[in-house]
Length: 129
Image (cartoon, rainbow, N blue to C red; front, side):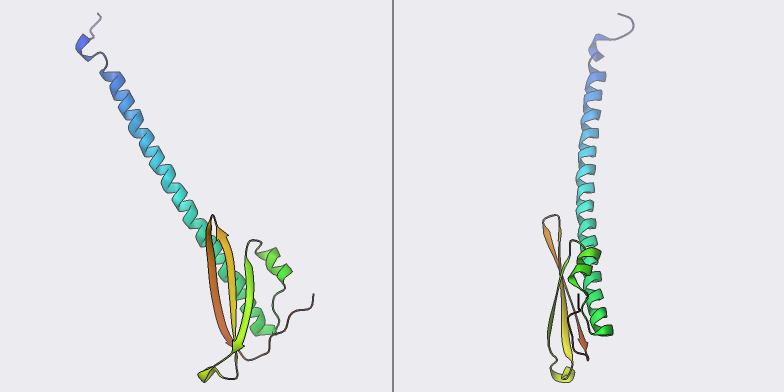
């Protein structure tokens, strides 16, 4: 034998297998954590889009008295549904309209619901299409 001791013949192979196993476990953990971050980021993106769509509806109603058309909502935020509810103000808000914009979207299999509300003084009308 050319300088290799029979006692340590398989040590290199065992070290190689152990290091590859540890590397594989680390890569699996990295993949799982990246998937978790991707889910979280998509949830935050959908939530931000719901807020933007609801805020646009409330701003349009406040400024013009008209809702943004559903065609425009679908064009700007294709995966977001926005509904508007209105009721009379109570207490110190009597005489005003309480407008609620409810936005809904999906992030993977998690529903995202955002509700924004505002008191306004002008009547609400549907925009002509």
